[in-house]
Length: 638
Image (cartoon, rainbow, N blue to C red; front, side, top):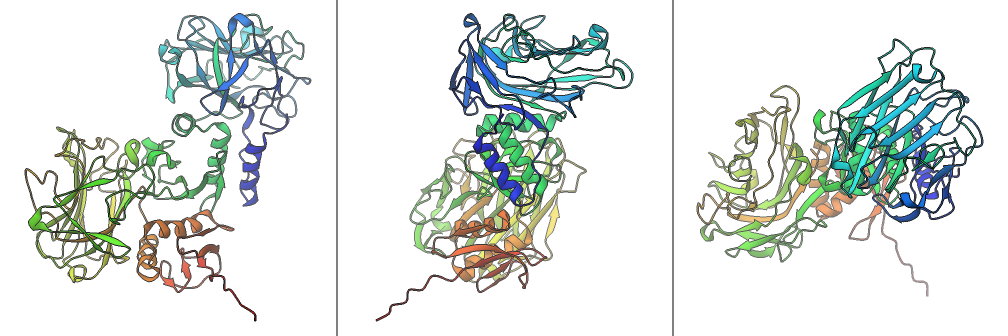
């Protein structure tokens, strides 16, 4: 009954910044131990004892427990009181009127196998059984004090995908009723997807009472076996078995599945991320793997993506407005510094290959890449890193670059196409139509073509092509709501370009961005348009440095701060992102950048948000921001 140190050490970190830990996780077995007693990660919830030796093995989320039916092994819950460790227990008499249970499982068993079972003192049951009434089915059975006359029994429709010997996430959520009979409901989920369900009993009403759990060995709670431990035993692996006393929404179930499938995170980590989100801006904490996560805005504002883990594991969308949580630093998905090569400075993000000899020259930061239109040279991205990664589409993001040019003719900063046949575009044009005009264009649904597009065309401004270094950045978000509710903003040297025209804002919930094409004539190009070898349209003339992509729509304050940190302090995108992350992590946060200077979070600052005043950078309208600490000074005494 003692909490695991790693789990509650993190919860304590959340509480320390004033965020109440989520309390509806009432029982959690991570199976990350190999002891006779299996510890419950939740205080005051019952531990378990291994019977006949189920073994601890590598699992889906840390370690798992391996059950062998022939060995008659299971976990016996050491319950010494009648009312503990079950959903909605309130002062010893709450009943299981609503809740959720989930676990990761790996099995190929085709007949009855029990995940969880118990019997209560007044002849009631609480059971979750696999392959009951047919292979591939599941049964959740809640029987109250009146026996079969007060029961909720639900069966999942046949689905064999979960019993193929690979890891899958199973979950059931339920609500009983205190009103009319036949109004309770159960939803079963496999890998985050709801399944069909049928009921044989649905008779709970206001008089239904579930008594306390039985404490006798033959009847008390079991994991991996049915009641007395002899019937419908588990054969396979279980991991991260959790019980919640609230009913999960479909979005929460999807989030729990995606956290495990994409990050190896379990229920304890979900609690931590939920608490960060509930804490709002400035809230941060570490998950069990030591990763710092923080509250963030600017994620895709799409109701159909709530609960999704995007940005290749770097962020989680938590609401339809695009708020959620992200890893510190994970905003920056791709960065090409062009310091002598076209490698990517972001871990695991793809780099590029120089074609037809663009040359390396002195840049804004270190080196830069110089393009000559006459030579049709460009950078070929073998696998384009795009905002929101391969799993989230480009529904929200930002792309920025430092540029130096005097060229007045049309040229392409970058371009990418989807696979043949889907007509997806993602392009940035310079001097579009007239010198000084830029255009950023996305077209995302191969089914509807131009009807699912968004683009921005700036006013005619010549300041950026004066032969000096300038910073360009475009930030956008699309929508699942009404048409013409998307947004795009173009920034030059940290300031929004006035007079820009946004058109084609027709993204809807049906808009889908296909995967990037991988063929040579369709994958991402920097400095050229689509397939420059066959159709050398308007390649770039000029010099580029720090070509960067972020997985969120950067705010006007962030766009200003990126320019100021680069222009005034000489910070590249990595260092600038580190400084912004200090602010995102909130009070007490501090980090060191590559010049050795430490930046720390501060409140009560004065100044214009986004503008750097020596070593002070205000980052919101309330005077919160970051301050760079003076370098240590060595004093020699003779």
